[in-house]
Image (cartoon, rainbow, N blue to C red; front, side, top):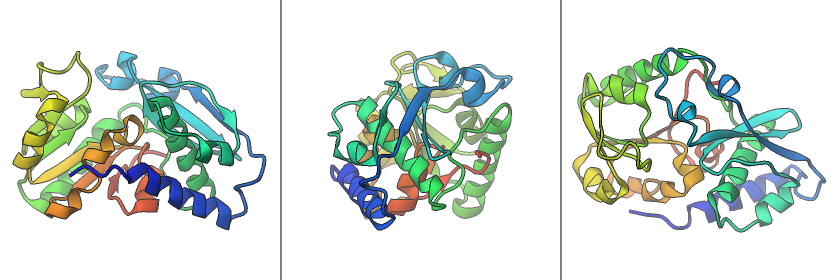
Length: 247
């Protein structure tokens, strides 16, 4: 199921885009910074979102005033040109986060995507409720593989569907959340064979695990990615994305 060419394809699409718009050789300043909790997600009542646990953060790129984000466990700062971003080998999650955040900012600047800045306060709860309604309308009562623990989405999905969850966080694996056992990456193959629908966090694009879900169209099971991180990749590569309340 894995598609090892995901990043090569993404970089190729982005490269063609910046060449077409005459941006490739310009000296363009790309800045990335780690957002505070307040900037990233506001002050939601529930405190179990990954952003508030401190292990992963939103890294934000600014391209000519347009913002793009990437949810990553290796956040940091970067200043450079689009050429430098595209020429950097993707050896670490930081490299991937720079590429993804930059792609999101560039595509936002060019008007190809919207909703590239994370929603705030109680909006993640509302987002989860809207996702449930969309799934019920489109798919009925599918068995769902949730890839990446997003607690509001899990809680809402678990009220209506049979759900299994795969997560990378060792603090979550083996725990029961909203009545569902959180499984580790070693269980992914079995979970994907079991499900009818994959609902995956867009941060898989920043941590590299998206290759396990990107090419799942070959067996006709739909994949819905959620979040700001996947914005540009969804536009450039034809992926389905759900992120109605981001800005």
